[in-house]
Image (cartoon, rainbow, N blue to C red; front, top):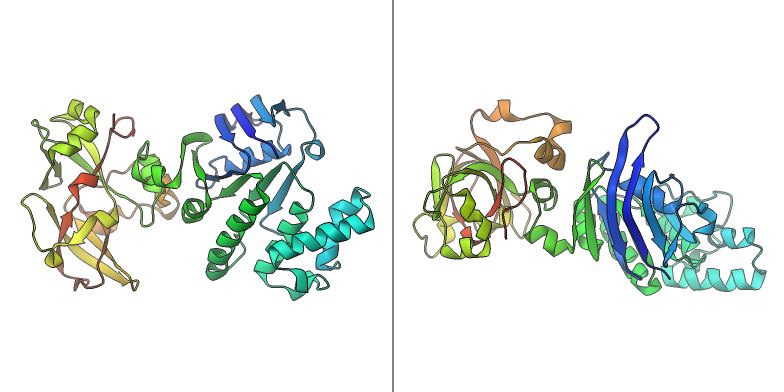
Length: 396
């Protein structure tokens, strides 16, 4: 087993296009590090540099305390699992799992033992004589993992391994991969564009955008204290609602469009730098779960509500997701549009006029429905604030 350290690792293509810039990451033995970001964020390029499939332009890559920048892929003792499985269709499961050992001239008895051990770990023992075409997508993915496990690598590298599976199978395989990775105890880089996958699997998550590391931390830390508007908009499903706003001169109120919310003193205490934005504009963030249907509340303090027009209500059993329009301006930027996919879908501003879209997650007891006027009770303790110029979160 080995630790992995990327120190200011950079990749610039011959045409001058930077793919990854100054990436700093440390992955401990046994840790599952998920690299997540939209298409073109540099996550797969970073993975390929760790594998040795992409040359590092500058910076240092260390494995187990040894610099490996110039080592060939075969000498790095890493194992990759791809989204395509890359199984040999004419070989049995046992032959696919043990193929790399056969190439290394490992004895037949040793190959048999390692294949059986891997198959037992992966729940494939009864399929060792089957061909890939006879297996489900999830079983094929486990065969691909078995092929990696038998090599006893120092580092696992997984590139979008669940992309070819249906939604239900992806959920099952997320848990399977996490369980197997913990039992094997090898440092693992896992690349995905799916932030839900990242949040449910990673010991830590590294968020990349335009080849730069935006933030790295535990899933909960990224969710509760995003460093900037990109991370705030990217992490969370549904995404955080982000609006243009302003802070009062006294620092006790925040205005969102035509509406005003009272800020409890604890908000300023928790965010000392917020004082510098008195009587100034800022970006205000509200997580959907911090908006509740005020009609169900036992008490509604003054200055704690926002009024909006309900467009659509999605019933998900344990909650309702209420899509609404509010008399305010969305905090639109290149970063927020990249984080939410709006840059690929195209702006929807023309469809909603001067109003901004939003989503609330409310109790299934709510009677809100499309075409109604809603009053949302806001958990003002959990409002998030960002500098509109830099996009950085306003905390300490």
